[in-house]
Amino acid sequence: MDEQNISKDLVEERVVQEMEITVDPGQTPLRIDKYLQERIMNATRSKIQSGIQAGAITVGGKVVKPNYKVRPNDEIIVLLPKPQQWSDQLVPEDIPLDIRYEDDDVLVLFKPAGIVVHPGINNSSGTLVNGLAHYFLNAPIPSKDGSGVDRMGLVHRIDKNTSGLLVIGKNEYALSHLSKQFYDHTIDREYIALVWGEPEPHAGTIETYIGRSEVNRTKYRVWDEEEKGKWAVTHYEVIQPMYYVSLVKCTLETGRTHQIRVHMAHLNSPLFSDEKYGGDKIIKGTVFNKYKQFVENAFKICKRQALHARLLAFDHPRTGERMQFEAEMPEDMKLVIEKWSKYVDVKKEKL
Image 1 (tube, rainbow, N blue to C red):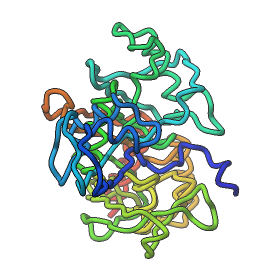
Image 2: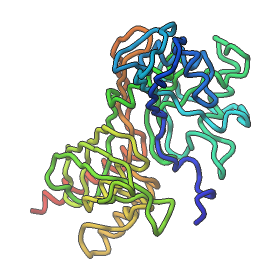
Image 3: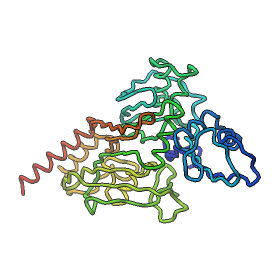
Image 4: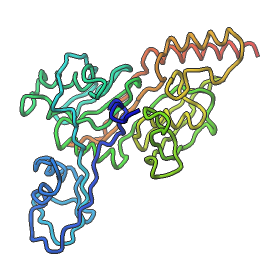
């Protein structure tokens, strides 16, 4: 498959662009914001200043002010939010949004399963971002230029068929601050997943490289070679074993595309009903027709990978306050877990 035909909801979570710049030995004193504006393509001075104020741009490992004047041989590290390529053609759409929190800097919302986060080649409309564009156009606090686009910065993404919480940066400063938190792995993200089998051990950490499959470019896989993937770390814990499936809590250090889905499949415990990674077939259980029918009925209840982004915590960009949000499990996952729990109870009674 040509990579240009891959939907953009499969793009890796490259929310931050990192640059290392060494100032030329012959450089005359110059404000760092002006110096960087001349060297970073498509970076406005206000965006650079926001990055400096958010602590995302350092010199010699230290935070500086926008009026700092660069010196010969200064080592500058720049972390800036990546440009969001779809913003110029974005069409606002009146899509219902489940907003859990909002202030001048951040917006936290719940994304239901089945909706794509942002526009891509195969989904130019009906996305969460289309709905956000409409919301900001009509929000009580209007955007600076009236378009709404400048107030909408994606900091992270979750798959179309995963439900859960997302945080949006509403201005350059908030976006830079949140992006740096993701880069530093200081944002907490906890997921609940229903997986096949019982991962062994029941609690642990999966550390691998994850990259695209060479066979199917819409899928990802674990690689041994660093050049074929990006480092990915998932902590997991079985919180409710149910014979042939288990309820698992996963916390992320990194945010690679399909990370939990790939890592659980790597443990031979693919997510329940995950057609892309083999969880839409009976992996564990009996050969009896009654059991097969039971599982088929469960698939009909939860028609997507059983994965939910339950918890999100971050430091507020402006106040520094640690903020934590939790989202209840959606009905399809709740029903299928109840169904498995009852199955376990009946099985125990027969033992």
